[in-house]
Length: 599
Image (tube, rainbow, N blue to C red; front, top):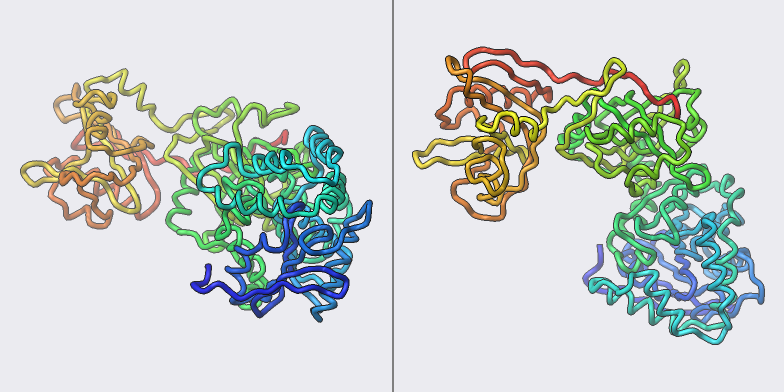
């Protein structure tokens, strides 16, 4: 996104003394920094946007070269400063991007003068700080003397970047520390005291925010948490939350490419909507991978999550999950009107669907109950929308609310998928009032039948892993029993010896040799990471080329023919019989039963 040649930009002053930087041409965007920074902190965004945008970065009151704010300022003082600058520049309307304290100013500006603002981006904004965090911020504000505080600046850098600062963030931390060292101590103190008490100033007014608003933060930002951004997006009529994985408070400096890309995508969205006759812009998905992620749901059990109006995580258990559409990517889940969480989910802007694995039966029961604090029983992180994503899930679908449909005594939540993940773990099932585990445990099988011939059909990106024999034939990886990495004759020992990282999933076939029922063959489906070694015995074959391979064992050839067909149909079963005859038992699909009555 960055240009080969840095754009020309200059610093100027408005008649009221406000200092600002301006560069580029095109649609105007106003950038407002946070406490302790100045307009130059936006240099990464200026470099990446000035080729298509008229970028204006303001020095807030008390920062850079701008005059001091009043002794006891309000957000409106900083918003009026921005309006005066727009008047001076002859700009009738702009989009505005604010960071931290600047995000509160950006919101105030959009609320005060909605006719002047096209879109607003709030980066790492604060909202309804929890009591312990609010107390810590108030104590830091009370300790400010207006005479500078080198130790406090060092603590700020540690809070924003980590202690010690990771090597890859050294340059960003240095740039931030330089800005802190240059700020006027009195301007910093006055502004920080306002920042310490203004986190709830927009709690009621955000409901009236007329413009599209993006609330974006980092998953590791504890002071401007994902829950805060999700709660603000929930209140704003046209709000949206985006959480950047692994990022902290200064993500605009620490991860400029990623952060700027999200900003530009949001600012460009109006133009894309016009070009697509109003169809909402979404991330492009690999439809095959998306279909496979949806296919992780057997007769499954899910926990559906969101962030409540006070920033608290909420969730309920349901198995009324269904894929609706691949293009656009839509899924749905149902919640009963009598569920405690129904009012929260019915008014939410986003939610996440977490498909549970076999080991998560206890979590399913807790989230189907009226337990007071369900989330203490699970490990979770904020997803891209801010909704909780549960660790260990077979698949997760992080969604914006596309539509709420009332249907009898339930509400149907239709979600447009923003992000998804899936794994080869075994899913938890539910049928006729009982949990089921559709996969056959590899560990139990290995213990019961240690001499069993155990093999795997391992896939990666549409290719299946084969091993070449000395006589030129191909065979699937297999061994005597599942075994361990230290047992060279077992399947796991063979994979370890060839440095193949494999994840076994569903059972695919079980058969005995005809006339020799004591010899059993068990094959699983699974996935693998492409090995880094150049072992010539490893062959990766496209699925559609399998039928023509030179494979000695007729039973394996027959099994692979079925595998190719079932891949095409995206409908898998389990073969049970012998090498001559048997039956394929199809895996059950979604039943639509709902367990989400507690919420």
